Image (cartoon, helix red, strand yellow):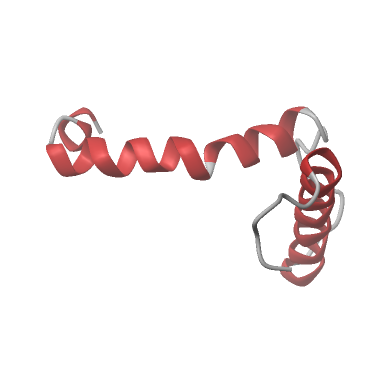
Length: 72
């Protein structure tokens, strides 16, 4: 991993990952306390994950609302 990150391309991709994906997973794990899924089976786990993502996005909308200058 260190060899991958030490390249110019690796640093670019790793920095983009930290800014986009990691905070969402951290928020869902810590704030929503999703440490493990309570259901079994791929379909049920996928549904539970989508519900957690929906709650995360609704929270963002509630916190930030609709911003000026953006399309409806």
